[in-house]
Length: 562
Image 1 (cartoon, rainbow, N blue to C red):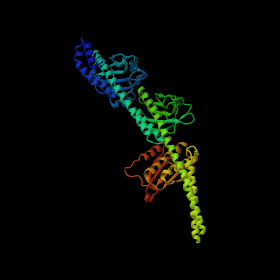
Image 2: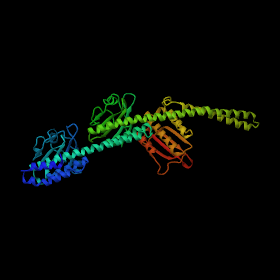
Image 3: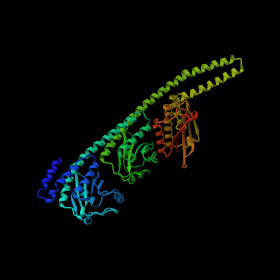
Image 4: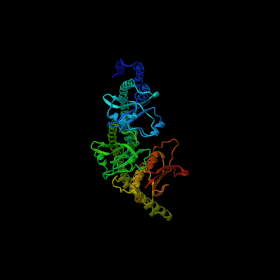
C-alpha cells in the first residue's frame, strides 16, 4: 500500500477518537515519513526503533527480527540502551522464552502496565535497566511476520495509552513497507556482491596461478563474501575423508592440514555433493574435528561440477555470530558451483600448459641428444687424435684433461635428458627427488642448473604437509629468481636438522642467488605468498642479502615445523 493511502486510512480510523490522538496525527505523519527514508536494512531498523520511541514518548525501544525457523530471534535492534549497558547485560535475547518468545508464537498487539505481573514474563538478566510498562506490536512485511516492535518505560512515569497503541500500530504498518523495500534492495546488493566475487575468482583462477594459489583465492573470496571468520577449501584425502588444504583466516594456525575423518557424519554427505549447514559448530555433534569449537554457524558447500565433486568450501563464522540466512545459503551455493567450474577450467588450462611444457622438454631433450652430444663426442675424438700427435707432454696432459671434462659433460647432459623425458608420475615420492625435479624443471627457463644441497634425513623426517608446502615455496622462489633476479647462480639448501625458537623440529629451505636483488618499491606478492604459506603452518619466511659480490642478490629462508 502506498504511504499516502496508509496515512489516509489511518486518519479515517482516528475519526471519533480522543482529542489527544487527533492532535498527534501530524506527529504520526512525520514519523511515517522518517521511517520511509533510506534503503540500508539495518539503518532502517535503527530509524524505526528511534522513531517509535519518540512517537510514544518511550525511554527504550527494540525490534526483534524473527529467524528463518520462526522459533527465535535472528537479530535484536535496540534504542535507548547504551553500549556500556549492552556490555554489562551480556548476550542479547534469543526469543526462545519469556514474553518475547510468546509474542513470536502469538503475534498480536500487547500493552502491559507492569511487566512483572504478566505470567509470560521471565524477568531480566543482571545489570539490565529497570523496565515496568510495555507495549508491543508485530511488524508484517507483506503477509509475513518479520518481527516485533517493543517499547518500554513511558517517560515521566506515565502509562502507555490506547492512543499510543494505535499510533504505534500504524507506524508498524509503514515500517513493514520500509523494511520490505530495504530487504529487496539489500538482497539485490548482496546478489551483486556474490556475482562480482564469482567473477573475481574465475579471473584469478584463469590468470595462470598454480593449483594451490587458486584454492587460496577461492577461500579468500568466500570468506569476504560470507562475512565469515574463515574461508576453507577441503579436498578428498584418498582415505574417505576431507583435508583442509587452503585457509583464509586471521589465525590460520592449526587449521591447515586438519582432516574431517571418513567416519564423520558430514564427510559422506559432502563427498556425495550435498551441502551441510550448521547452526553452531562448537556444539553440533556432527562436527568432530578438534578445530570445530573455535566456530559458530557454518556452511559446508560441495565444490561440484557436473557429477564430479572436487572438494568442499567451508565458511564458518565466529561463535555467537548470527546464523546464515536462506538467501546467503542460496548465494553461497551458487558461488561454490561457479568456483568449482572455474577450478575445472583452470585445471584444464594448466593441463594444456603442462602438455606444452612437456612437448618443449621432449624437443629440447632430442636436440641435446641428436646435436649437442654428437658434437661433443666428435670434438672429444678430435682432441684424442691431437693428443697422440702432440710432442710436448704438458700439451698431451692438458688435452687429456679436456677430453675427461667433455666425458663428464656428456654424462651430465644425458642425466638432464633423462630428467626432461621423465613424466610427472614417474619420480619417486621422496622430498629429495621432488626438490631435484623442481630444480631440473627450473633449469630450462633459467639457462643453467641451480645447485642443490641436503642436510639431514630429509626424506625420513619431513612430513607430507610440510614437504608439499616446501615444494610450493621452492617453486615460488625459483620462479621469482627467473622472472626478476637476472641471476647467473642459484644455490638451494634443504635442512631437516633445524629447531625453531619454541623448540619444535623444523625444515628450512634456503634459495640464494647473485641477481639484482629486490628493488625499492618493487612487487613483493611472491614474498608475501611465501610468508603466508609458512605462517599457516606455524613457521616463517624471511629474505636477505644474496650470494653475489658484496651480498648482491637475494636469499630467501623459508622454514616450517616438520
